[in-house]
Length: 171
Image (cartoon, rainbow, N blue to C red):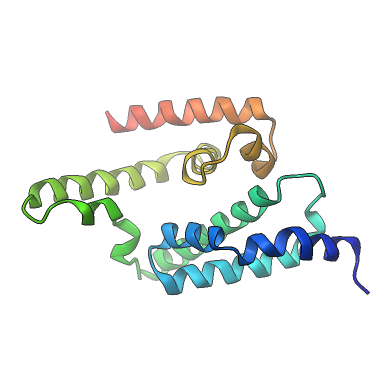
């Protein structure tokens, strides 16, 4: 017998899971179509399994995209643990846009992106997750607060302190 959460899942969550936005987000993170499909599939399964934790009235999109981000991180960590890190995870699409006549600029840009990913990994999980929600998933403060389960003021302070920590690392 379907419950209220099952109906809510069908009407509010399922369209987000099957929409192009979630797949596009997963594809931007993984930079591989097959991995993106895997991440969306894992996201769908986890969303269904934990549908009882979703409260009507909260940002469903933020909830789904946070699950997707966690699934991407899980896949990334599995690959890293297994030593199967793909070059795609360290690449940046803007590198492909640099003219082939300027290989030095392309190498510089690729190195910058690689360093940024390394710098993000050195941050505490709280700062890293806050920055990924705010800038990687393009969430506003309220959406990030809901997704991370913290007050908006904490999101703003962690964003500020996370950026400040990145600046110190990058210098």
